[in-house]
Length: 345
Image 1 (tube, rainbow, N blue to C red):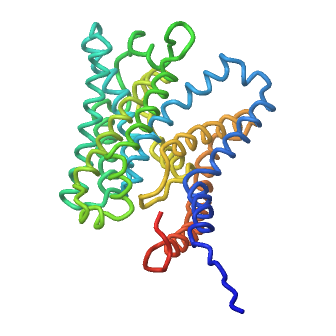
Image 2 (cartoon, rainbow, N blue to C red; image 1 turned 120 degrees about the vertical axis):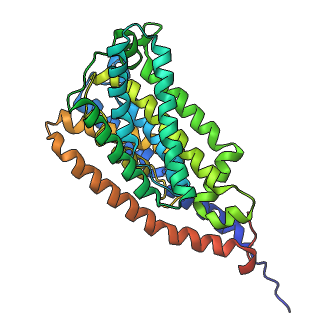
Image 3 (cartoon, rainbow, N blue to C red; image 1 turned 120 degrees about the horizontal axis):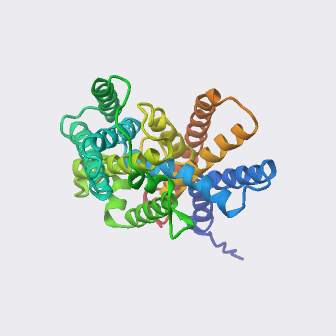
């Protein structure tokens, strides 16, 4: 008597496991962390979830969320942008200097000029990185130093000029009397980033970060894709500078450290350093988590000087966990590939 056994296709077991690992590797833990931090804030500060208090928290987080969305585009394509903090500082100082000589200038004109300047900085970063083949880490580090030196030379370390109420209103005012403009900007940028990643450009961005050679062989114009990612990152940094100007006023230190906070937020959101994997929603959730953590530490009376230490621990832990999780995901992919007898999804 012959007994027939049915072999279950590899995809039946591999597919759910692969999906679970993919969700874990693309930001799953950050959502749980964000919920825990928000719960801790509610316990520490009973009035935290009152509308005004919660909107104030989101408003404070908005510049970092916008920076994280822009930084995500660069990192997921396989690069780095260390210049965004300097772009924020330069935007605040340039706005004040401009208003110092033209106090009646309309704020939409000044804001549009800053966004254009941020895009130009991003374009320079992208062209130097892709056309001259200078690593993006070095390119943007150099751009950061150039902008910081230019701001110091221009102002002598003491920025001049006063930002008018009409300009600062976008950062600290409300739309319709209740919704802060900063929160609205955060929602618009987030929705635009999610939409962008569902377009052909978003897919080519991920493909470029996963393997620029394979993307090139598939017909993707890799230099153009990466350059556009830098342009969008620079524009996002310029928009963040307008919000920061509303919060802090004129300061030559307005954007110091924001580049590292943005990278920390992206890594915390499960985005793989080196590119090719990660969710923009996870990156923005990482920014909210980082802001929630800093707020909680502040409420507990922990020195703000420890924020850099916390960021360092987060980056090492997040990258370490991502590195551990990637081999397992790759093994599942190999099991599912036609060469290994599996069925591709």
